[in-house]
Amino acid sequence: MSASSIFLQQQRALHRLPLKAIPNPQPSSAGLGTTKTDDWNMTQEEATNGDTRAIDGTANGNTTTPPPAQDPPNYSFPDNKLRKTMEDSTKTPLILVACGSFSPITYLHLRMFEMVADHVKFNTDFEVVGGYLSPVSDAYKKKGLASAEHRIHMCQIGSQPAPWLMVDPWEASYEEYTRTALVLDHFDHEINTVRQGFATIDGQRKPARIALLAGADLIGTMSTPGVWSDTDLDHILGRYGAFIIERHGTNIEEALASLTRWEDNIWVIPQLIQNDVSSTKIRSFLDQKMSVKYLIPAPVIKYIEENGLYEDGSLHRRQNSENNTPNNAQAHN
Image 1 (cartoon, rainbow, N blue to C red):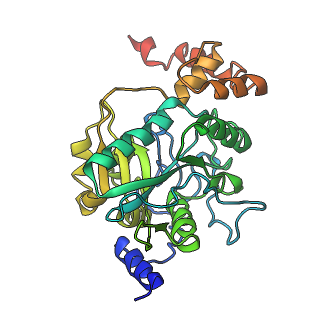
Image 2: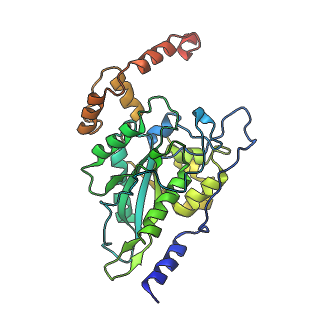
Image 3: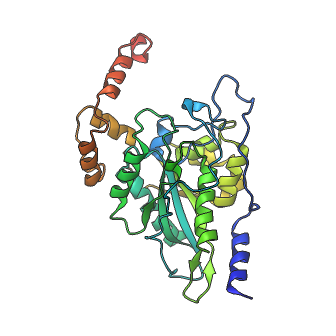
């Protein structure tokens, strides 16, 4: 049997679901009066602060359409830090993909990859061969979201010292919002179709498992009825899987109880040293002229200062205004 035939058999076995394009889900009538969301995707910070994306493309003014058939102009998939040859041919190559705002990137975003890498090395049959940050596009209407150009660059300079982390601008390059399921499909195509997976020391090639990397609150939203599209949930957890960083205060066992269908594709990583840094907190510090040194990479701080990001004071003024309104909870005490 040829090496290409072996590769195709391995690739089919790697994915439990059929290799087919998933349609854009249609708006549901469930939960009338509220915005139904599907895409709470990535960091503890995003989930903790109520960052959601719309299944029907209406939340926060977003417009959701299928990504164009062609890549953005001048786009080139970053692969310079991918491992060329696997160290252990008995294992399955693993690509970690973290989707989020990264406005700005923090040390916790970077640390999450290392926590998963340690867990994978000692507890699984995977071998990490690369990791990616995928910043969301400007179509994701969110307060405090710097432009995609700035966020891509901050991710690039923040992750530059990391030997296996890369920044893929594909998602951020589109004017339209792209669902996480489609982003993972993009990585699967680039890694397993275009590049035919990874070489092993015995001369074969193996398809890689593409997996989502996210914070613990993601699982909480996935287990909440009506929050995620069933189609996307099945595609993300069934075909790809997710590595979840545990977070203090999140009841993982309760959340996983309703996701038993995909329990073999969900890996929960304990956070042995608690880190509660978030982009939202960083923006608040910067807004109030406070130091963020040692919370985010130094080159990112320099870039923020040189480009005048997050310094208009609007966030601090808005928070003060909210604290002084009669409807504030403190006013009733």
